[in-house]
Length: 399
Image (cartoon, rainbow, N blue to C red; front, top):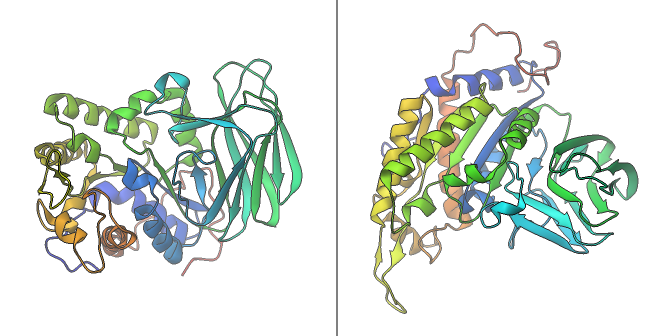
């Protein structure tokens, strides 16, 4: 449990909805509790989130992998517990750099088949899954998308329809299914995301990050598709993890950022009104002096502290929680000590972390959440389950 008095701290009231759902999960009233993290490269790498996912699933059960960006959405894509493969030609569009090629949903990406026969597949290296879903865009005259489970054609989906309208299809999978493959039988089929679930009660942690993103990326996403995505996920907890890229901006505008960040939090509250929200303030980071080759002098960008302060102020004003990642290490410049730790906890760019560094931060966040949950009233009167994925209260409790 938490022992570091200097560690970033959470508070109970903003997390009541999340803790109530965890209690319902343990009491057999919910099938799944879903955690959604949205962010930049710290999220896209799925190191920090993989630790959180594993810890929650070990304690509360494995609810499945959940939503992921389509195919090999970006170089170096890493998704724990699944192996992703792709054949043929897909045009991958990024909502950060190719806004006009949308619309986009929460994944921040889309993949469009360039030629017939293009495939993308995922194979689980963890538990088998019981159902699979795919979100795609309709278009007039759209061709067929085939869904193959464990090498067998299971469903053929016509993608024709209203141009740019997102549609989700969910397919039940035979017991023990471990692989999902999508085959585009024509060019021009656009996939927004895909997901796998299992019927075992437990937690999902969905991590959707875009490298280089700032919170302004919310403006690049379709409000209608975001509403559909949130309705499908029904998160109990949303982790909002931006700020590193804003903190390195040379022309940072505090007033504009306060407005943009406040708007993002407000959108999340509207899209997921039943969810708790934690704003994760950016970790420490440094940049090297200009034209540096060797023995660089590293300094903390002045805007990074401003970003963190604004996020805290917005969180407090909006009644959501704030967790200051930078306090996991020493004050400004602490990342340099992590770079030179043995073994290293941060990479040489003084921005990103090693697996061990991400694990240290994620473990601290998890321990704090479980510490608070342990103080959540055990005998709180259980309200009628709010969610559609409820199951009979007579079901066997989790340990």
